[in-house]
Length: 123
Image (cartoon, rainbow, N blue to C red; front, top):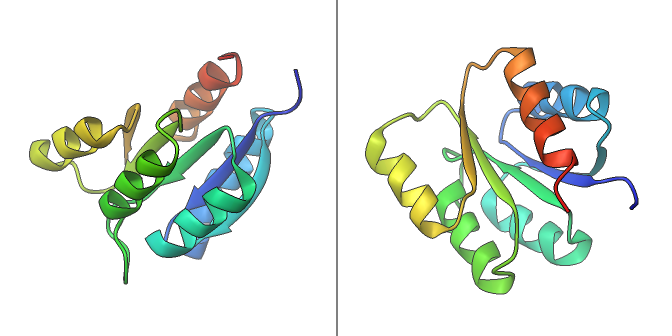
């Protein structure tokens, strides 16, 4: 089993870097970064990472639209939403669209570290 790869999608560079630092510490390789939903879908197609972290609120194409498009192209995709939006309707919409988990910003480093470690062991 090789190293797991993650695609990090967030419009804020500082957030992408923070998620990357935590993912790397947990033993993941970063397949790439994207700053909006359409870029995320294109990178997913090219990279086929093991996991995608996806923000909801982004300029251009939002995270929910990107999630739906990724799931349409690959129903087996593993996507976790990482967003400051914690409204129940948005959470329900994400889970319904295929997201496997949801982390609310601001998150503690240990919360995200545990999350990455949990998914590292998944086949």
